[in-house]
Amino acid sequence: MYIVVTYDISNNKQRNKLAKELLVFGIRTQKSFFECEVTEKELKVIKKILKRYSQSDDFVTIYKIKVLERVGDVEYLEIDDLIF
Image (cartoon, rainbow, N blue to C red; front, top):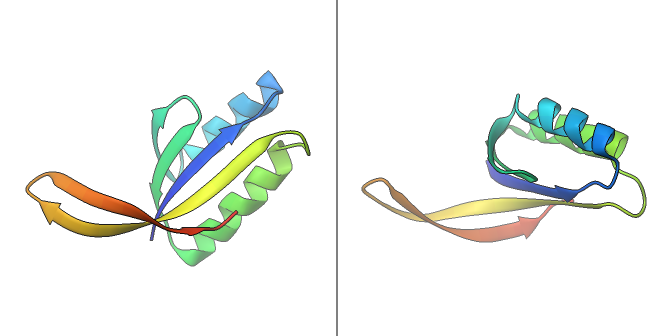
């Protein structure tokens, strides 16, 4: 499945550690924005990682993405579900 992980973590040290761990699962397209293709098992691991590094006042979201159409190198996507 395709997912997008976005976050706003206030603690710099925690935010940097989180980014390093997320690089295992996908590509960093912006500072706090990762695009990943993962299995259900990997998604569970990502959720645990996000819980470990985020505090109650931080913002963390995982969107499940649905590919609508591919035309050449371009993919047309839509948000399929809010996971976390």
